[in-house]
Image (tube, rainbow, N blue to C red; front, side):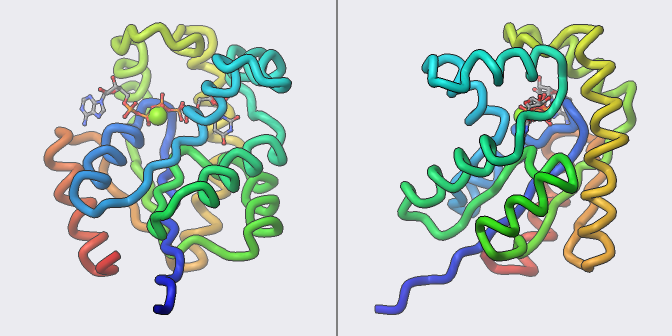
Length: 190
Ligand code: UP5
Ligand code: MG
């Protein structure tokens, strides 16, 4: 039997734009495996792995973990999973991340979802979350937004030029956003 070829969707958007929330819904409907780069990194911290304390310091400041660390974690998850459909949530966040991924994985994603959301909405959501995330505070949120605008938006622009970016209005109810997402994904029949 021929193995189904991999289908990879990157899920991008600013901090609090709703990436994680929508990925969970996509998993329910389409059976993707959801890989949140942030969750993989937080797991390294909580499991006290060798890079844990370095990752903690960077996340606390809202900066970006070195590409090789993140790409390795993503690769490990992909290869330890049977599924062929992946949502990679919150990665790549910099042009350097993107190039490192392409170099190591040797392929571009099939599509990119981008949740476009006003800054004030994202900030409000993050500061209301209160789930104890070390980076959910006024100070770090400012850096996360700055990093998003300066380093992550160029990645979004790159995929737009490639013609594989789908921009979704993230300033809606969860259900409204989810139906926009389904419209995009049904065209791909993943
Ligand atoms: N919420 C969601 N949708 C809503 C809606 N439509 N209406 C009203 N409320 C809504 O949502 C955020 C909050 O809003 C939740 O309380 C939710 O209920 C509510 P969520 O779905 O969690 O949004 P998300 O975009 O996933 O926000 P998150 O905070 O996870 O975004 P970040 O991109 O900041 O976080 P991530 O975990 O990806 O990264 C954290 C840090 O890790 C980074 O800052 C960086 O330091 C590091 N990192 C790297 O260095 N490299 C990487 O590749 C990835 C991460
Ligand atoms: Mg998230």
